[in-house]
Length: 475
Image (tube, rainbow, N blue to C red; front, side, top):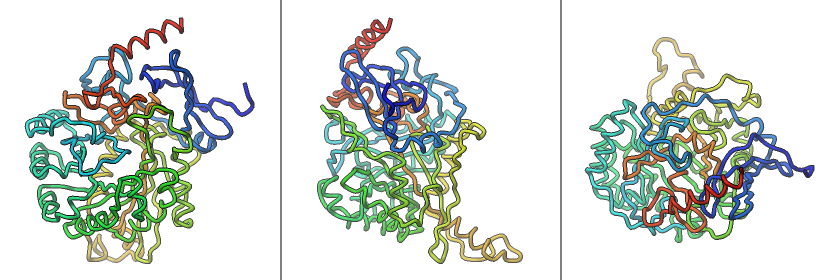
């Protein structure tokens, strides 16, 4: 065994990018970085970078006690990732539910999760939408609802969908959008706000038009800024969502954060999403084409000139620790950004988090902090004698809270089934199942999927055939 090799953690499982058969995998440290390595008996070896910086990897993971679904809706037959629905082996409850109400879109981006240009399925009917609201309401949890697509704003009846959801008891509605319609049609945004829209989750890849031309096909910065202004006019909170791609916009991270701060308090924060490779990729994406969580955190530090320190970012309490990061702040009147989170390197020595509690806290945090704030105009806020700077901090915490976070979605090359079983972001399938985000979007190297787009689904029979070959070779 070479000197530069060591196990980063116990072995796990993944899938073969060529056939999606489940295969053993291991997290391995090589030359100071962490890779996921796996071998398919038919299609050979695969190695993908998952974490640059093995030292931070060792101190990042926090223990968590799994919480299994109380009422699983699918039978465990072929096991993960083939029985999603959720099955009884899933280790986390639902935090956010994505309703993909259309696959139509007014952009055709090569990095689209939803494969919008290639899915010709009809829009969800209002009866289908209501069926899901009824199904979710029976679980007695006020899930955060994300209206998604495609581009959901191509539907004129989106306000009606939100009103329908509120009638079934759901209070927080987030709109995943490219913002193009909201930029040109503020009256439509006003309708959404009146219906109960809480937050616009705005695709926002950078502060330069050449970035949008590369990722989205044309310059869009002006439309993005108009959307932010219209949200400010109508009191709808905004979260900026950049897809990060090395050598395209990874150098613009600090500028995106500064722009977000300039548009506070209507902009609530920035949620970075490192590029993942769904769709057709006949060759394995190069490691240089990926950016990992610790790299994003370091770039935030360096590109904000130390305004945001790396040690204020923490692993999540909801999903698997290797999936995301977050840092929470308060913008003070003098422009100082005060961190209210702190990561401790001895995380593995702390008390385990109960997964269900982590999901509940995340639902509450998002609903409270991603919506537009209600401004407080009088001090002291608790009455009686003023507490000076403490009063100012408490007011600003309510009106000028700000967060920076990121989520690294998995594809067929870096999929870790331990992470997948901890997923709390679930997509509502048209056949009545809740499917973890990365399982729903998973595709093999030819673009065939397990769950999305029935016309391009890979044959379950062929997967299980390869599974049998693997198991027989292992005997």
